[in-house]
Image 1 (tube, rainbow, N blue to C red):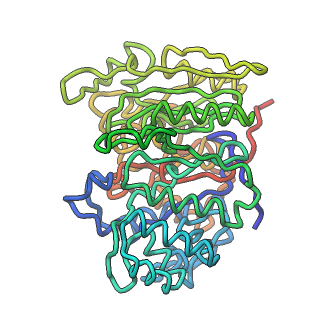
Image 2: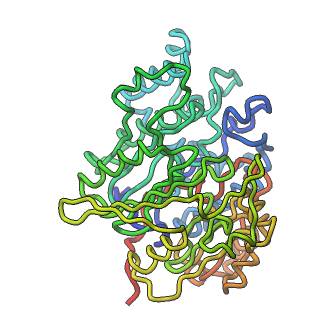
Image 3: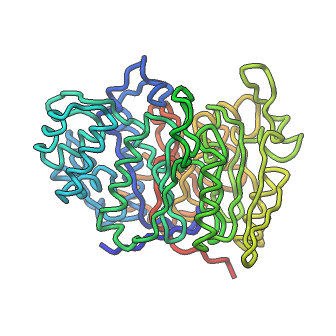
Length: 478
């Protein structure tokens, strides 16, 4: 396994990523705790796995590691091919499951003891329970640390159902990793497990000195105990590496300006990037992170929510109202860019989101083609807001112009087709790939539509369900 970790854009060909297949913990979310655990609804686990997420995994393997899936008989009722650490698991070093990384790290005895003690502490387990965990095999222990549940069905602590959204645990910034700090207690264990993986797994051995952590304010312990919120929080859905020297950070419901300031100071001090743009969006559950309101598809194509777009006319087409009946529009977005010139840090403002995205395409990515914006729901009321809620703007690019979206966002798919993109259902494409009727290299300007009735209940799309570790370095077209 090579140790290349590098991402300098959102659109270059994807070569390696971390995912996490839906685990048994998702099937244990109860209605009374769903919102505490940051889910909008309970899901049907078997449907999510077999009819939806399995196709996501198949697509990733066909594009990133085809040898692992070609000529495979996937009719096994137990789904061994898709289960991390099982005998029949595909075990790719390109499409890597978080659970597999965790089991590997637990093979290091010193790390295993430290990690079990740390998890037991934050979950307030008894000393005897902690000692019992240390007797588990590493594969079962990895499942327990993620789901809270043993193979025999005992439940020791809550699941962490949001781990399916691996984007939020960390972001690769060129050849560094920025570890995130979640805003809610429900995700604290994810963050802890991720730290032990990134600091101890052999895959990340070349990152010594290149892992950046968000630190709590040095006087945080003086805050009132009932304040309830951390000051310095950052989640990966609010961070995008959009160009070789340009990082975006959203200031949102989950990411604070204090954490963003830390990132600016740390990255500029190490000369990792030259520009960092802060995008302040309304702190509403509707939007959550910046990658729920826009993502990039090609160097000159972006998909975004029209109500937060540039012109009054564009925003008027897709009305969005909050609970008080007040309009949320493009004017509610504030954008400030910080950039280095020599030893000085300067700043500039952007009037609107489209202006910033056009700047990225034309200035940072050296794109000479006209920049196009595709709007959620085709910018028709009420479909823009409805489809943004089910992740119409949250797409993962597999290679430039080829991205994974959800099949339920019909109007957005219509908008893509109007701009010249093809759309194809993931089930149909996987069947064609399995039968050799189409080759990955021949697929261009295509939105692949993933089955999504259960996945969309969790409020995250394919962009959320991925942590890219490696993309081909971005090169401007000649």
